[in-house]
Image 1 (tube, rainbow over the protein chains, first blue to last red):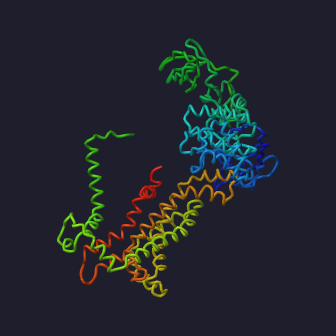
Image 2: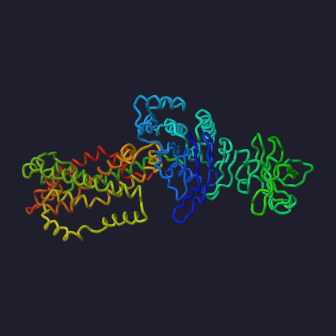
Image 3: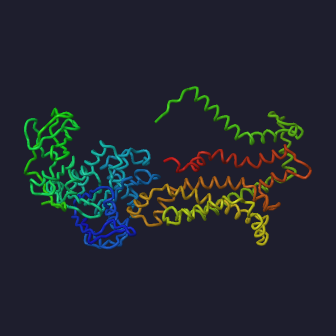
Length: 332
Length: 274
């Protein structure tokens, strides 16, 4: 079980209000991602759930039990840190065994559980090594191993992949998703990388300045962002946000159109534009253009397009995919 | 980025490094050489080739007891170090793991006591020692050396403890460790190398301390520093014997320093490079 409920949770450090007031329900077995820019309070929120920080007010309940004032160890949660936080003086086996040892399990049980975890995480050959002798990916797996042996009611991940290189990050992302499918345990995952959020989450919580901007599945957030912040944050490349006459034509203060919802033509279209930088990725091409009367736009188009700096092209937005926003930034 | 170093400059720098090392080491080397000379040879002037006589060592042993000051040095150096560690560990611990906005000031104040010239407090300390009956006692000297080295011990331990990442302690907390579990299984093993090099350095500092050891002792508690000083007698300076006594005094710490140099260097540069 791992149902987590936050009610009117507030956190301030001195006079600084990090989290003004948060209400959130996390269902058992869900993979929830907290995403937001640096300093939005996502890590603080995770640490509040872990019990590493005290709430200023409000309650946190796990499976209906109020744990607001309980020590981290009593909450039956496991955490994977950004820096891995392995015990450098212990071997891999001892690192993974540590929570079991603290729980007073028998040596036979510990040995069996460590062996099981090592097998799942492909660490069986490294059990006698120390963290210093492992690569970044292996260290991260040891940290995950240490988390899974306890069979916690939920896993907390604090930007666990940000110290890895891009290729390894992709692999580990898959491994963590795979682990979630196997264990079916609640996972809360903090990241500033919206690709991680989109690919892994059942539910994304978008945070900004300590407030929840929107909660929903990745596609919900992609298709119908509630406001300008979420519209600009979710999706890569970012959504084009257009103000002025072009927006007024659609009866809104601001309109948003994603780069993939603009069609390109060399002969005719709604907006005439001049190509600036063209990024050829092979599968896709990102054109950074300046459209007359509209402003700078990013366009996502096929990989084989032959557009170059200074070329004139014509763009037509997919009318059904235009997002409209009020002057307050709320979606219409 | 690696810089390309030509063979010629490599030779030049190696040469320069050896020259500097030799200049630093030379006084010790010359002490050992002089101790192997006869007295007339020793006063004859600069000469690097002794007659390799051991008579000075024999005479130093027969004229004065080497063993007693040696034991005094051991007791005072080790005693003051242990006492210092016992006091400094909790101090450094609390400053490293639950600092307040005054922590930096306290650390600076501690260090500032080392900037005061020792001679400035000689008279009050001498009077205190006299009134408390601590003059020429091992306990008095142990306390004194512990106190004068305490700021350095606290500072060194503080830097060590600061290097232990807070996330590791939080991980231990998440893993179900109690406060004592955290201290026993995680913090202490990680702090042991730091405590060990701090102890080594403190033993060396205490062993070499001459200002207070010579002034606060006469015979009973006199360590090796006072033993050397006693060879500058009213009848004149006996250079060869003085050198033999010095060699005997520094030999133990030199040997200890040689075997623990890796630990020591790590201790002194710890935190400088990640």
